[in-house]
Each structure stands twice: as C-alpha cells, then as structure tokens.
Image (cartoon, rainbow, N blue to C red; front, side):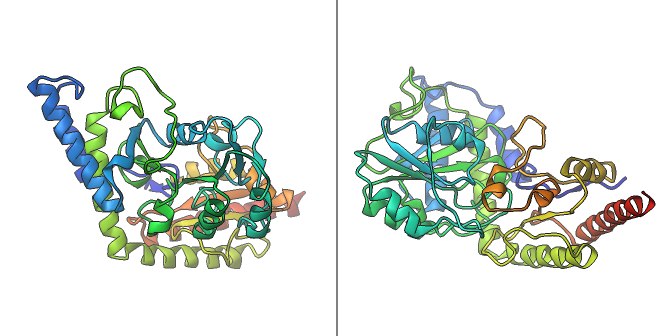
Length: 373
C-alpha cells in the first residue's frame, strides 16, 4: 500500500542534509563546556551554527538560546517575567494555555483574528508588568495573525511580547517587526530538523529570567549541555528551508491546498473550511465532514495509508474538541468532525487526489448508512 503523509504541521521528515550533519556530528565527541581541545572544538562548531542560524533569521546570535523544543521555549518565555499579567489568545497551543495559571484571554473575532481594539483596551489597564503571547500562525487552521499590529500595540503599553512562530518558520517570511518581539519560539522538527531541539529568541538587553538553572551553559540563560548533533542538523535544515521559501516553492503548495478545498466542497457542500477567506499558511487546511466523527476519519484515512490529523498532535494520542475552534464559534457538529491536512513541499497532486478519493468514499459511505437506517 502506498503511504501518504499529510501531517506536516505535526512534524516534518528529517531533511537529507540535516541527517548528514547530524550523523557527522555523532562521529565527534566532547562536552562543549570543557576547556580541553575536545570541548573547545565542539563549542566552536556550536557557535558557528548559532551564527549561521542568526544570519538566516537576521538577528543577533546573542539573542539565541537552544532548548529541548517549542514546549520548553514556550514555558521559558511565559515564566521569564515573574509577576506579569499575561494575555493570551484562546487559540494558543497547550504549551501556552496550560503554563499560565490565570491567563487573561484576548477577544478574537469569528475569523480567528485577535480583536485589536479589545487588545488595546486590555493593555491600557494599570498592571505594573504585562505580557502578550499570541502565536504567529495557528497550528490547526494555519490562520496568520496580524502580529505586527499586536506588537505595536503591546509595546505602546510597555508589555512584553512573546510569539510561538514554530509553525510559521520558513513557510512564510518572518518580518523584522515580528523578530523584534521580546521572545520568539521556534522548533527544529517542524522544518525538517531533528526532534528534541527548539530555539528561543531572547529580548535584546532586557529583563529575562531563565527557566532551567544549574550549570551556566549558554551564558546562564539555559543550563544543560547543548545538544550538539541536533544543533548542527537544525542549522542545516533551516538553511535548506529558507532556500525553499526564497524560491517560492510554497506557492505551488498553496495552489494544491486550494484545489483540494474546492474538491472537498464539491463532494461535501455542508463542510466548513476554517479560515477559508483569511490569510493562512500555504500548506494548512482545516475542514469538517458533518456527521462523521474526527477520530473515525483519522482511522479510516490511516487504514487507507494516509496520515492526517484531527488537530494538534500534542494531546497524548487523543482527539478532543478544539478549544481554539470553539472560541471561534464553530458549531459543535463541525467541531466533532474537524480534520487537519497539512502539506509539505514534497506533496504531489497524485497524493492530494488520493486523499480526495478516500474522503469521497468515507463521506458517501456515511450518507449510504444514514439512508439505510
């Protein structure tokens, strides 16, 4: 059976050059904190990789710390300003929503965008310390926030700004304004790097409290020996991914995604395409099949050799009603039948055609069962 992978927002395959960089690094050894030649050699290569990443992002290497992944980066960012009143959107990943004990949820409109007037009203309150955390692109729908405006308003009221840009990295350009957020979360495996490595862009010469202490690595900003092989692979994966962005390879994927959605609505007119008329990541589509439970769809597609998702993959293998989509006002019948398809630059027309074929079969089988009953 042909296997088709359409869940790139969950993770992306390790890129060949990133794999090569990882394997080459495994041939070397040494603790980068050691002062002997073995340690110094590894340390120098880590610094070179950091400079390469910083150059690709057009930021100072001093702003970069490596973490174990986007979850740690988000935790670190949100806990880095003790005592701050934290405002988050209801669309955030659980590594944000479950970290803040008593968050203030920002108002969003039915399209899933943060209400900027409401944001300004919230921030005008007299809290001594404030932080705003809004992801650049939603992992389930691909909806892209007007982050530049959010940053402008937040800084106007002296609020720290954090954004989880893990899904957006190298799929859309990250403007200088976005990277001037105080804290930016990125992840290696979303762009074809290895799992287990994240990156947090720190504020430039501003207040920051580390989450992990006890070692002094990374100038005291994150304790623990650096993951040398993963760092080398991340630097290579980012270079390759940024080349794809420059060559506009995602444009053809956007066309493929749009065609897929047209076919879905032709087969299932009652389906909802979430964010259809909103600026989205070029690879992401989130839609419903009314009357067919999300988990049943995922299992049916898996049996047909197609990997898709019912939403965020970070929920212990379970499928729950999406609180983010619920906050957007999606009717419950659609919430229960939502599916996320996320394409990669290697996705082909034949693969999306196969998806449509299976989608049609699941949909029509459900209709036939209802008619029989």
